[in-house]
Image 1: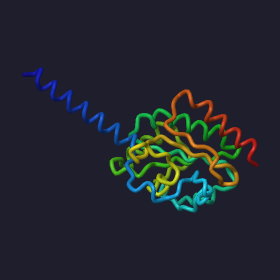
Image 2: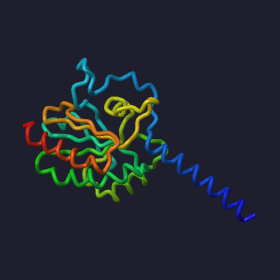
Image 3: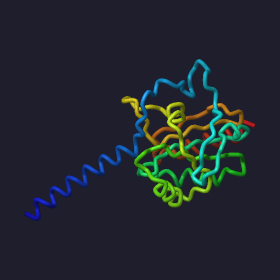
Image 4: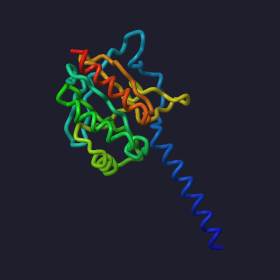
Length: 193
């Protein structure tokens, strides 16, 4: 009988873990095709939008005020293991290149399954010192690359040059991508002014 209960508990825990990973890695957004893409060849979106975003600290950040800097918008979900793994790298990039003009904004996907305490824990564990904002779904649709089923996976990031134009996109980062990401940031810090 004990074996039966262990099997049931194991199955339930496994299902919850798989479901939870799916929720954290895929911020489901409806009607993704209703907004223009940031890399739209028609030029309808050229760069950093004029959005006011609420920070985790309760202040307001206007994205358009960041023009004149190289800006990395790092989209994440606090409960996503892949996001948790790459967050310290992003925090280190922010610290290392701050003096050279890099601004990193951590963009918490508005996920109804994540509470403020989880986001604060994510920020603490990653060593994030820069702004963390709550991301409206419009920005997710505008800047992230959708999966084949129309949902958006995280982590993803977009990089803007000094002129506010989108210059690079990073999706589903892996350990092997870190060097390329850093080189791309350095390139735009060096060549964009």
